[in-house]
Amino acid sequence: MAIQIKTLDQLKSMRQANLLVRSTLELVRANIKAGITTSALDAIAEANIKRGGGISNFKGYHGYPAVICVSVNDEIVHGIPGDRMLMPGDIVSVDCGAIIDGWHGDAAFTVIVDPVDSEHAKMLEVCEESLWHGIAAGVMGAKISDIGHAIEKYINSQGEYGILREYGGHGIGNAMHMEPHILNFGKAGHGPTIEAGMVFAIEPMITLGSEKTKVLEDNWTVVTQDKSYGAHFENSYCIAPDGKPFVLSVEDGGKAQLARLGIEVSSLLS
Ligand code: MF3
Ligand code: CO
Image (cartoon, rainbow, N blue to C red; front, side, top):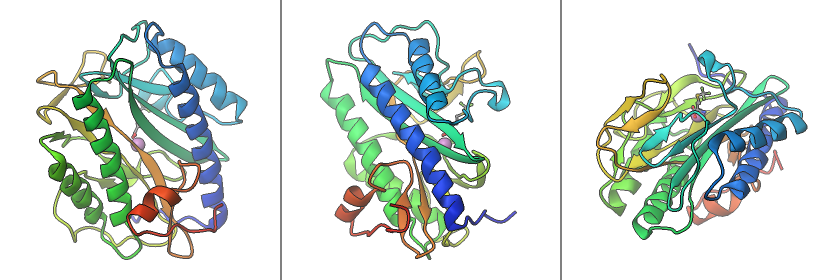
């Protein structure tokens, strides 16, 4: 199967879906504090998606019961919201998606509940910055594996981190998970060539220890085997019809972050 190519109008719908995801994530972020339960965060997210005219792509996805994933400490991704109360110092990853007019958005961030441990803070910075390096490498004409190569190279330049092997980024469009699967590591120069109209969700997942994970009894929550803590950041970006990238899930399209890395974003979607 080929990678789905979107028209400008379809990209505009994906922009709307991703902006709703971003506003939902920011609302959740503003509510993260010691004492709140992860299910309360889910309720806040669900109300915001509804208010924005979106539909959750998480709820009901292979039976997933919530509109966000909240993964705490040694949980890296796919944590199910529930009665768990956030505690001081917790590392909290929140992943959210939404559909508008049939087109999907998907993004995630990680934050630390006060007080912030400096080693944990550095891990979050490294994970987030690796995402920008991945997008900067995934420009028109590059190969899909150039993205993961750039992510891994940046992470390894910053210290000793585990990079999850079994999970990665993905194509996204009129479904949440589409071709291709995008590893967060590997050699450059392999896989399909990146073209205008493609959209990818890039999502590095790293840990302070081993990259080995297991899935809990709930069949969703992905935890590290060595109980080391981790981080996860995700953005969805496109190659616009003018051949320039645009980060659909960030307010400014990634303009400021990508300028630092020498990449100009498209003006077609602003
Ligand atoms: N949004 C996640 C990803 O980044 C997938 C979440 S699985 C779900 O690919 F079941 F929670 F939807
Ligand atoms: Co994703």
